[in-house]
Structure formats: C-alpha cells, structure tokens
Length: 164
Image (tube, rainbow, N blue to C red):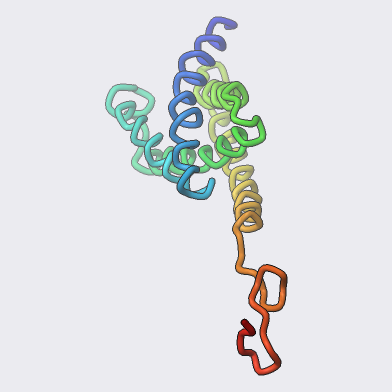
C-alpha cells in the first residue's frame, strides 16, 4: 500500500503539478489575476485528462454527465490548488501531496462506492467557499484610482474643477 501512495505522489502529484502549478500558473499570474489564471489552468488540465476517457475503463464507463462532473471538479480543484500553492509560497510539495491524496481517495478501489461522491462534494463545497475568499483578496489587491483631494489624487476647488 505504501508503494501505491509513493508512486501516486511521484507520478501524479509531482508529475502533473510541476506543469500546472510549477510552471503554467505562475506564468499566467504574470499577466492575469490568480482566479483567471487558475481558470485557464483548469481548461488545459481538463484537456490533459481527455485521453483517459478513451483508454481507461472506469472513465469510459462514465455517463456524459460524469464528464461534466469531472470537468467541474478540475475547475474547482484548480482554484484550491492555486490557493494551496500561494499559502505554500510556491512549494509544489503542498500541492502534490493534496493532488495525490485526492486522486487516491476518489479513485481507490478499496473505498466504498460513496467515497468518490462524498470527496467530490466536499472538495466542491470547499472550492466554492475558497473562490469567494480568493475573489475578495483579488479585489483588495486591485489598485483603485485615488479619490479627489487625497495626496495621490487630483485636488479640486469648490466647483468641482481640478486645481492645477
């Protein structure tokens, strides 16, 4: 069992996260806000997994709504992973461990049938709450024009005309 965990951490946790949060997310954050960057990563990340729907029996057995749920879980997970990467100060260890743990919990043949659904629902709820927090933080970090009459803003006379 320990070998399964280590292999999952190395190949799926670090293997994917080197590309997603180690490279792509930081590159996108140079031009876009964190949430926008995470949304773009989610699209690429979901595309990365598309071949699984043709080659993996459990993926092939999913109904069409399963694909929609899978894409939604990737999207929400992308927000969570971007947040984890931020609180881990860019360390891939935090994100890779969470990625591995999530993959094992949701795909393990050892768990009950309800485990993947419960995990997916829990992560979705956490992700939506986290998105709200990320958007608030993003809004707080967005520079706003200085108000008239402040040291960085224009001054005005009583008629509302700019004083130069």
